[in-house]
Each structure stands twice: as C-alpha cells, then as structure tokens.
Length: 253
Image 1 (cartoon, rainbow, N blue to C red):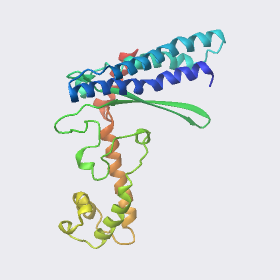
Image 2: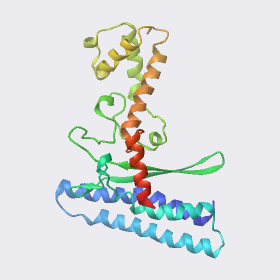
Image 3: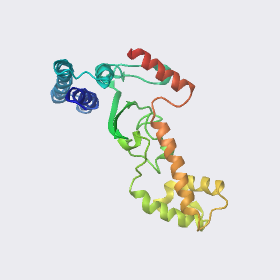
Image 4: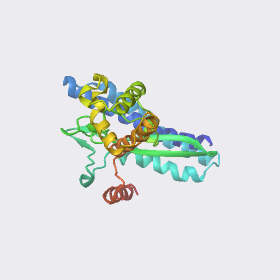
C-alpha cells in the first residue's frame, strides 16, 4: 500500500477518535454544567489532521502518479464518512444522530490483512439509551448480562467472541450444579445470575450429563453471544434493517 492510500486509511481511522472527543465534550457538560474547551480543541485538532490528509493524499497521488483503484474508492468514501453517519437520522430504524444535544452516531473502522490483501470494515455504531435499555439500545440487553455486560469492542465487531474472564470458573461451577440437578434457589451467589438460563438449558437438554455438559454449555454460550451481536447491531438482519441500511447508503451517494 503506497503513502497516499495509507493517508486515506488514516483519515478513516480518525473518525472514531474525532467522535470520542465530541462525545466527551457533551458528557462533560452534562455532568458538571460547565463548558470545557479541551475536548472541543482536541476534536478540532483531529478534524484538522483528517482534513489535511485529504489534501495531502490527493496531492501526492497526482504528483507521484500513484492513483490506484483503492484510492479512487477509499478517498471519497473517507471524506463522506467523516460527516455522513454522524448527522444521519432514520426514526423508522430508531437511529437518531443526537438527542438533547448529545451525539450518538460513530463509526468503528477495522483495517486488517486477509489472504495477502487489505480489508477495511466500517462498522456503524449508535450509543442512544432508553429507560428500558439504560446501557444502550445497541448494547447487550439485560437478559444477556450474565454472559456479556461489557461494551462491545473491535473483536466482537468482527463477529468473534472474547468472553469475560469471570466466566471461566463460573461455567465450570455451573456445569457441576447442572449435572447434580441442584434447585436454582440453592445455587451459590456467584451463579444466581445464571439461574434462569440454567433452567432453560435443562429443559432444552434432557440428555445432559457429566460427559456432555461442557460441550452443551459451550454451544449454549455461543447462542447467547449470537444474540449479543444481534442486540449490538444498529441495522438488524431482517427486511426492515436491510431496507434501512440501503437508505443510508443511498444518502451517502
């Protein structure tokens, strides 16, 4: 990848950094009621840096005759994504760019090498909350918190799972009480949060025993985590979600 393309990629990666500083500014103002120019200044610096890369990558590509297919695609894409998603609202999909002055939209870019080629994933994120989902509408919902309450990170965005370290011992202990068919009311305190899930597992797997309990738990954790990712997705894998995503893409043209 040549230098102009690296500058374009850098500009895309600066999008979430810019959004973090803007969000911190809003959160800071809400907490203490005072305007703090520090985060605005940092956001401005990041935006200025991104804007400078916009000029520089095009200038270098033309000067050094390094115009590539990647550059033709990614350069205008980076420019649009710096502003398009941040200001985008689609009420039919419960996507709001801001509420009460607090911005919600951001993007997680992931650049990686796969099969000898660069792959760039741009993940649309939204941090809006409601009374029903105080940690976030697009965050693991409360029923799943016994497995995953922590924020979704880059690994999960790529469709992979990094489970909290606390689960290692909890799942071993849960296997023991499942095999013993211990009433959930008698579960140790650390396992009480898994009680409802444990009852569902026993009802679903009457064949559960000491030989297969760990494989069953591994499979059931996978099902839970699939729902975690579904909760965190802004656009759902259904007709309404696909249509909403198409509307956003059309708005970026």
